Image (cartoon, rainbow, N blue to C red; front, side):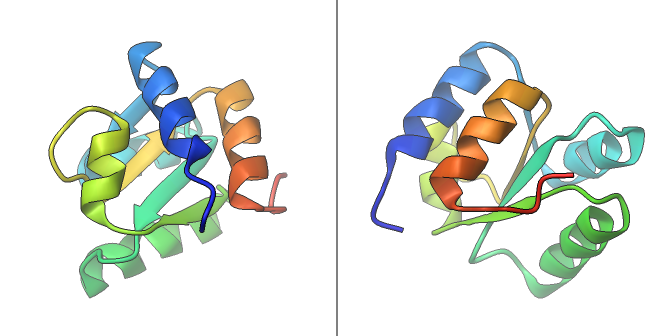
Length: 105
């Protein structure tokens, strides 16, 4: 993806405390129905990838791919992050337009 504007928006969502990062916390948010969008790095481990993809599919949460864990971490001002959940519908919808995802609903 050539367009990196999503990293700025994700950083803004982080400062607004509208994201959660880390595998277990993200899975918890998906189960609770609060996760509106999940962003998974392409270099995630196979087990993590399968777990997150399966949860997103069964709970109907849109899933996007980030290039790698370092880009995803930099976007939210932290070290490497493999998975991030956006818990705000407004941020999620805007991020999905940037990722060209049409899985809403």
